[in-house]
Structure formats: structure tokens, C-alpha cells
Image (cartoon, rainbow over all chains, first blue to last red; front, side, top):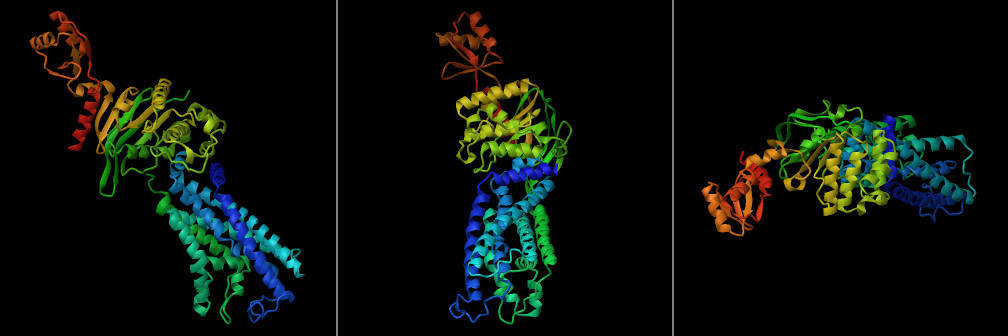
Length: 278
Length: 300
């Protein structure tokens, strides 16, 4: 029964244009950033670009050895907004186009439908993670290699990083599902996703770094938890000098993300999903 | 052959805040017949049907199919097929994919998709995005959805809306065929004339309350029946009617006489030796009865 519901959710995802439009935009976005920043950092590290020429005092350059993971992690550290959007659109689309009617007629067990959607989007988010990784690693390693810096692709730690990135992307898609049921208005949902991920959260994380107490809270922000799970992010590099950059253990970061997904989804079930479909 | 089951509403009520949309409604719908579910817009028809289908939770009372609530049906789409008003489809998805998703979710064979598209005459348009469909094509797609599980019960909300004359003729035949196969067919409309030719029974609601139920013919007794009669010698006809004690008034195509059936008037003319050129029942009698009932509900 649940398998049937999951297959139906996959069919819904794949029969509209949203998934590949988002995938293409994500591909371009991550490709551009990982390529550009890989060139900048690898240039500085290899001495091809003088630190002064980069407009900094050298503090922007990461310590030797951590550059490749940093570039590869663009897949999730800047790409996570795409699985969130995919998940949010998958749920809000049902409200917007009134497809909840045929959905609930075919399967009146609403909690099961929502659970199936979360599982399907978890897997779809993982698939988005694969595309994102192919982009950041493909473009990034090419550029890094061009500057003569070790790509670390033979390193087991790098592959463990890839696994954690896939998990993060999968979890972000389920958070999108939760947000979509919590805020069924499609426009509102998209605005919240973009405003929060691109503006509000980075600002909060930055602000929280200035004192010990707020840093403790800041590490539980979803983006911070995601970076903790992945273990490398452009964000930790861009922290203020002398700032407190506390970070959760990777597994704890994963659990925090899972908690966000669970709380929003269960909350959304009561807020919108089990309501009358008129 | 699918077996139709009985639809039963028992004391069903739905309140939206202070508004009572459906008020203590009880009726049954029998298999093998087409039942018209009538009432003006806003009478609570759609709310009632959505309660039957588990989409809206009743404030009190129950709605069952063969004794089971929709949630408890082991195979919902194989038991009841529903086409609801504002047929809801994602505009970017093709008709075929819409049906395939429902078939997957309900565990029905994918071969049914092509079959039902063919049945409703959309075989050539199955690969087209629904966003490009006309209202009539959406109605047909809605019907295709109802037939997906070959169910014994069909629930259609305003299925004639937006259909062209050919489509209307087609759906009338379709409804008759479905009932003749033993299925339960419940079809809503705000116009009696739309479904008059295809329904056996009528259930009429107004302001969320039941105002009438019974066979279509039971409506005729609700208003004094009017017979249209005319003669080349209209004066002689008028005299004959007066002598027989029949009340009448001049109409556009003859005299409008108040009588139970045309035979009575024909016999009066025959015995008076008056030639008759027109003799039939006033067609809008049923519509009048319907409107009277509905207005009666208004004043409650």
C-alpha cells in the first residue's frame, strides 16, 4: 500500500516540468559558483593569484588541504535551496491545482499519502544531490586540477563527504514537503524559502557568531545544521575574525535537519493536510 | 459486471463556522437507476457529495456506500467513481499521466488508462497537457477518471456544464447505459431541464435541506398540470371547456387548460365535436414544480 503511494508520488513529480527546470537552474548555479570560487581559492593557494590582488589580506584563503572539500560542498551549501523548492512545490502544487481531490479519492488515507510524499521527496532530494555533486565535483575538480592543487578525489574522507552531502540534500527536500503543508500557499512558500535561505538565515548565522550564547543557538539553525552534517562550507570560511564558530557533530546536524522535517510535516498535517477539501 | 451499491446519507449536517451548508439530510440512492440530485447553486449539493467521498468531514451524521464510509472502502476507486465540479487537474500534466497517477495510487492496472480515454472519446488527446483542454474536454477527462476502476457507483457533480449539444446527448446516453448495467448513478445539477431526460428519481435540496424526493413523475403532482390545446375553431373549443367545467386561459399557441392529462381534454373536444389541432402537456410543468419546491425551501 505504502509502496503504491510512493510510486504515485514519484509519478506526480516526474510528469510536470518543475523537476528538470529546477535541476537545470541548480546545475548552472552550482557550476558557476564552484568553478569561479575554485579558481579564486586555488589561484591564491597555488600563488597564481596574489592575495593582495584578490582584495584581501590572505585570511579569505582556506588552510591548505581543505580547499577541495570546500568547493565540492557547494553542492549542498549553496544548492540546498533547490531540493527545498522541489519539496515545497510538490505539496503546494496539490493545493494550488486542487489535485488533492483526485489524490484523496484514489487514496483516502491522508497520513499515508503525506508520508509517501516525504519518502518520495527524500529520494528525489538525494537524486538532486547526485546532480549537484556531479556539478560541483565535475567543475570544481577540473579547475582545481588546472591550478595544480590536489583534488583529493582518491581520499576516502572526500567520498564520505559526498555521502553526507546526498543525505543533506535528501533531508532538505523533506523539509520542503513539511514547509509546503505548513504554508499551503505556493507563492508564500516560495517567498519564505528564498527569503529565509538566501537572506534571513545567513544574516542570523552571521549575527549569532558574535557571542558565545547566541552561537550555541545559531548552530541549530537549519542551514548551520546542514553545514555541520556536511562538515565543510563556504560559510565557516566567511565567518568574522575572532567570531565564535561552534558547530554540531555531523550526525547531530543530520538529526536536527530530520527534526525540522518531522516537525514541519506533522504540524502541516494538522494545519492543512487533514482539513476539508472543498 | 460491477454491482451497484446503495448510497445512504443519514442525518448528515455540515457547518462552516456559523453557516449551515447541509442541514440534517437523509436519503438513499438505489442501484440500477439514475438519480438526479437537484438544487439551486449554493444549496449544498457539492458539500454533500464531498462528504460522501470523504473529502469533507461531516459535522454530524454519516454518508455510506454499501454500508461503508469512503475511508473504510477496501478499493475506493473500484467501488465509486466521482467527477466533481471544478474538475481538478494540473495544467502542465497530460490527461494520460493524470489517469496513470490515479491508477498507480489506487492499484489499478495501467491498461485501464487507454481504455477509459477511448471510452470518453479522448483517445487522440491523451498525450496533450490538460492546460490546453476546453471545458468540455475536461468534463470528459473527469468522466474518464470516474470509470478508471470500473466502479458500481458513479457520482457526477454538474457533468453537463460546459458540454456542447453533442456532448450533452452523449452523456445522457452514457448515464442511461450505466444505470441499465446495474450501477448506481447520482448526478447533480442546478437545472432540472438538464437532467430531466435521463433521470428516474429526483432528490431536491434547497438551503441544505431536503425538500423533495421520489420518482421524476412525482414532481408532476406538485403543481396543477397544464395542457396546451388548440382548434381551428378556438371559440367552440373554449365553449366546450367551459361547459365541462375546465379552467383555462389563452396562451401563445392555444388554450392553457388545467387538467391532469391530455386525454381528458381530448375527450371533451371529441364529445363536443370540436376539431383539435394541438394537444399536449405543457412541458415546463416539471421545471415549475422544481422552482416552486426550491423557492419553498428559500422561505424556510
